[in-house]
Image 1: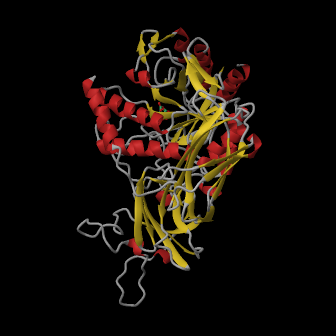
Image 2 (image 1 turned 60 degrees about the horizontal axis):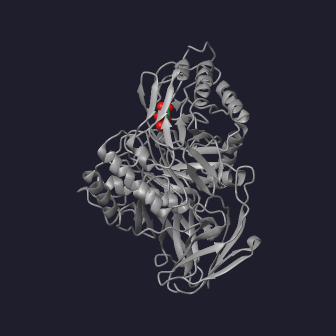
Image 3 (image 1 turned 90 degrees about the horizontal axis):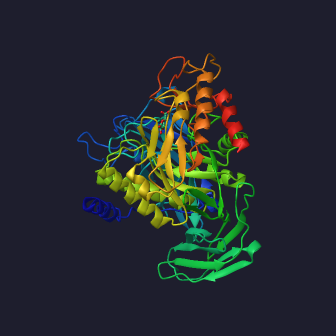
Length: 593
Ligand code: GCB
């Protein structure tokens, strides 16, 4: 016990250090200039544009954006006569030669921009996988690790009157100490995968806010507004016209304005996804958003949404586009995906295994779909490495920062299928403490593994002590036992907590038919679902499921020719958008319950 407490303290202490990057809440509601579209690129597997031949960071790397100008110039690169890539987008599906590429690509965009007087300017990158170094007009402004969360840097004193250029070095090399680590079951898409914006703000602006119902209540709206700049103690006004709220709040010296208001909002729920227009005004800034209110908690083995028990009819999803078949990021990607989610009869999605783009979360909120969101603490990362912990915690913080105002998110998940042990337990409990500290309004979970003894399955992972909701993955009928054996199992739990079976399923190639004993046929997959559903009905503490997975997705671990061809085939829908037989089995189950 003592070692564990020491380890937790260790992780919490080291995590206190700060980075130079900043975060801007609800960035699209600001005064923005898109830097999307084509960027010039240089593929740099040896990082020649970054290191000199002594392997030291070079002061004259590609970020200087030079090119040979005279016949005697020795400059060995030139962005403007190089190739281009679309942003947002992964590089793997845009160029055949980059399909399996893992390494550095330099992106450069030149643009005209005339900053307005007395404005602050930030460059905001929605996500870039995995390590990014950002330069503005030839100067380094910062770096970022983690492929799925936004980051911003102030460039006010770097911007020029008219012609400007941004360079971003993006490196998707997998590393053992990374989060995720070397080994995953999804495609390591590289590139600037989400929108890039220049954001203009007044000198003092509303940088962030958190508005939600007080935990366990349905009639107290509370939270905070964070100003950034110089006039930090000038009052701010929070307005929710429909609730007759027009609250003037005075911030503390650090610009943090806290509030707590009595109100009786219409509660958001899947059948009535009610959102309120809100606005926040300060002396010099205004931000508008749409915010919903709901309460979420557990009671014994129940999950209570607005104090009523709910069964989470879910499905797992990877962030792959049903339209481009690369990384998803657009509203169109989100709408197509969620149309299938609705057709399946779901009220819940598990966005696996990393934070997905904001579009899908916001669209799901409008459509009444609840969300489980997770960080890529996946399989066997380095539990005893302090940098790995710091990285995981940073990604958790960035996920929560961006999405804390989305009422449809009810679960933050800190890990997937991690091996039991002291160091892992200390690592994950530290993350759980951090998640609760950053956001006491939501439930925390993790996808754990089960213990089998004969036909008895027990939930006994010590991590579950610290979770609000237990997630558990199992592949009965695919990786273990036969599909039929699922029905013989007796389920036990060492915890008085709700369970979500966060994964089950099996692979099938759409259009491949045979008997239910033949792997990869739709019938084999269908039979797994039939038996799983029969089993699920007999787990008393089961409060939700997110089977694996809505549609087939790319994975380098899946090379079987003519069947997988580098796709994980456990989807209920093929890449072409065809529904497999198991889709209808699950749909039936969800519609009947
Ligand atoms: C799992 C993982 C998931 C894999 C899946 C599979 O347990 O959590 O990332 O893709 O199994 O298909 O094996």
